[in-house]
Amino acid sequence: MMQTSTKSIIMFLTVIVLAGCWDRTELNDVSIVTGIAIDQGENHKYKLTVEVINPTENAKVQAQGFTGSITYSQEGDSLSELANRMNVGMSRELIYSHTRVVVFTEAVAKKGLIGFLDYLERSGEFRNDFNMLLYEGDKASDVLKVTYALQKVSSLKVNRQIQTFYQNWGGDPNIRLTDFISAITSKGREPVLATIKIKGNPQKGENVENIQQVEPDALVEVSGLGVFKEDKLIGKLPITDTRNYLWINGLETTNLTIPCDDKGNYLGVRIKSSNTEVKAEVHQGKPTFKVSIKAEGKIDGSQCTEDLEKLETYKKIEDRTESFVEEEVSNTIKTLQEKYEADIFGFGETLERQHYDLYKTLEKDWDQHFADATIEVESTIYIRRSGVRGKSFQTENKEAE
Image 1 (cartoon, rainbow, N blue to C red):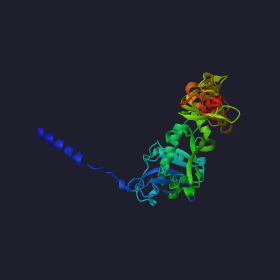
Image 2: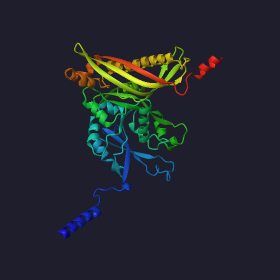
Image 3: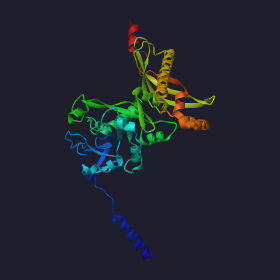
Image 4: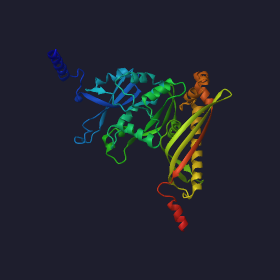
């Protein structure tokens, strides 16, 4: 019995030691995809462009000043076909699990993104943590070709750029695949995507010289917000509206520029934390909403002559900041109600949670009911400090005179 047990253990250990990976792939046989762009095709329905890392140029020792990535394009009639047919022109197996951005052109987004989303969600090749973006231009593939000095892989630069912009100013909605699909399947919310554009000449931006200049010929910038009805693009908003959208949907930090007189002077307020609550109420069978914004911040810069060492000055600044935020957010909501009839804020979801029975009667035509709803915005802003000094040096200089 003891001998049999010993033999079994030896056989088990032998299997572990000698067994290999049946589906192993050598690192030298694969290319890592970091970005995808989807355009309309010339001879087929779509054109797919992938950006893959050039490992030599991303190695500090071996880098020779060439681009840190390469792009390749193919045309086809479905994303599934294209993703699996890219080896028509590329020698290595493509690994899509490290994709950081997927960029759609406006022309494609206007026709609908359902077909792409189904493949991206269904396929085991992709993770769902990449950012989805909308390109304001003719070719989304141009975004993957613009070179940069500080980050040689274009899609990684764009991904880092929008993450930082979201954290520091609130200019990007930070939409991932799961966020977009969740909005599509919800009757009480419409999807959005951040829009980007290329400042400068896209063709010159493709050249290596673009990373060798103090002022590049081309640069990708975050430009605003794309508004959707289900999976179709219906319009765009400027970048300030992105921040106003985020006041209701998770704004972290931002900077506000508040007018302090009628002479063109402004006060900078840095918002360090914020919290927003939306309450739904029912009046005469119709929904109304109250948006309550609470935030804390500090004075970040001043062109004003007010004495920042006096308590009453802080109260005035808080009042101005509150009025500014309320007007900005209200104007964005009004635009979505009157121009697009698209509830990108999720007021319908709030009504569903708080007044389920009423929402079910309005669900079918919710966007129309959203357009007719009364929505009140109020804010409470606390200014805690004025940086590392009180009075402005301008004020002190005038007092000395």
